[in-house]
Amino acid sequence: MRRCRNLALAAALGLAAPGLQACGFTPLYAVPGVTSRLSAVDVVAPEGRTGYLIREHLDDALAKNRGAAPIYRMQLQLSEQRYPRGLRVDNVATRYEYVLTANYSLVSLPSGAEAKRGSVRVQLTYDSADQPYASIAAQQDVADRAAEEAAHRIQLELAAWLAGRSKS
Image 1 (cartoon, rainbow, N blue to C red):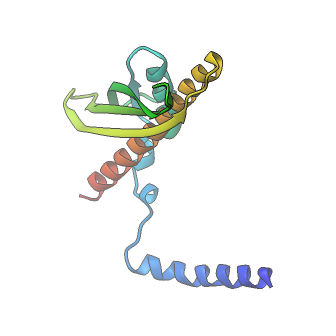
Image 2: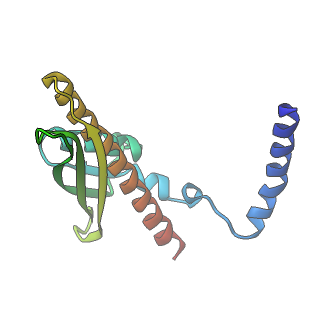
Image 3: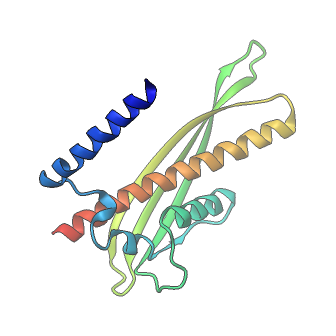
């Protein structure tokens, strides 16, 4: 029964695909030049653990081509805040809210002119443990997850911006 339903769903999707082409639907990464321009962004992040993490995640998300000369340089400025949440009776926080704000500026390398400016904000919460090692591990984990999410959001903003530029 389940197999028949899956086959029917696959057939329906197969029939709907040509209809999407007729209405002008184009996948974001199908626009010529988006992927090649994303891979030609050189990311310059601030010093520190979070700067390193977001640069690594951006290099992965943008599929950086290390063999080609960069077309754009991205300057990042990071801001991190932690807010205690869920206070116990003894006024000790059991949860924290972590906020990572990444402001970026994309500069065109041949001219040095600013091509795009943007900002992404990621909010995550994590549990605070009574054991020191577990608490440090939770803080590092939330910073890594926030850097990965910020990199993904920046990637989407840049891809949409590049797709819009190539159509006009």
